[in-house]
Length: 377
Image (tube, rainbow, N blue to C red; front, side, top):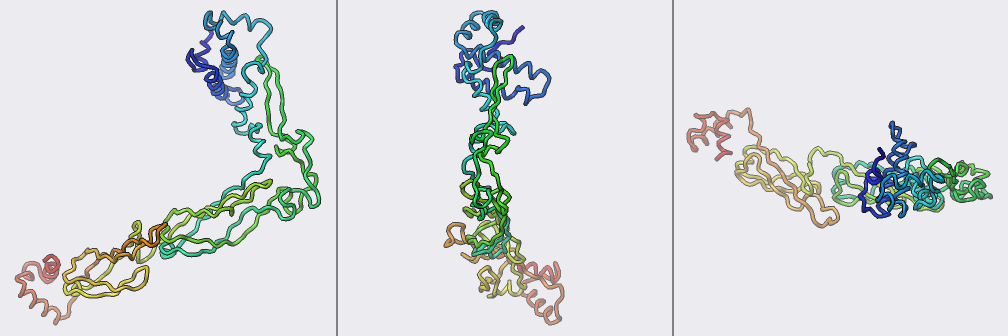
């Protein structure tokens, strides 16, 4: 039993002509024998063609809706199938299909290839030191990219000559091949094999670029790295990618930034973290100490009675906000208190006297317990 034509195309019985055409294109792509090698694909493709042939023609569709397959079988048995040019642009459908299929080389692609073509974008990974990422600055980089050949000005032809119009395609860049099948005439459009779709043939190639119109060159560039960049920040350098072809614009260079770790500082967003080791006496009595920051040495006030793990803040000593370098994060310093494991006799005597003043800390936990009690109290 013949399958329902609407079901074959996956549309409702009220579908208009545009819906039918879209459905047909979709199904044709899926089951075309050049694409689908599964068993039964070719037979399904034939059924899809038949369904679209009938439903795209209003009178035949009306007969099919009223009588089913029997109402249109006579038309098929008569003088053969309609010419595909009468079926709502069947040939155009297949040109559109192949123009998007890898290796199809259809007219849409060929037309783009013949005109000016933008050059490819390039990527460069650049490593920065911690402070370079914080404050930014000018960096010199070296890249290798394609530039327009200076000898032939990008034409690819020998100096003093010019490319000529391709005789195979008459400059169109396309060749058409018509194939008649039991289902009608198929027209396939592909890139011209002689000129590869450019529409021009180079009789004598430029010796500098061997006819490509481009040469590989290395060059040095100076780029500005903004303050506050971080791992993964991407900078675009306009026009420093590969040169375009046939007068097309050059691509862009994208520089991806990666920041080296620092022995002293750790970054968290726009804040900077570091650690400061102080003695237990400095923690008890307080002190003023010189600490390192990304801006250089800065005096830090350690309050008396500072506990281990206390975080002290140096405001506006962090990372500049990307895009707004006037605004900066903070530098957060975590205090680590060093408890001595060995004491001189006189030190023990002094601490023991202090223990007596504070109570029985030493008796309950020893000298180390006393020192610990100082920071808990």
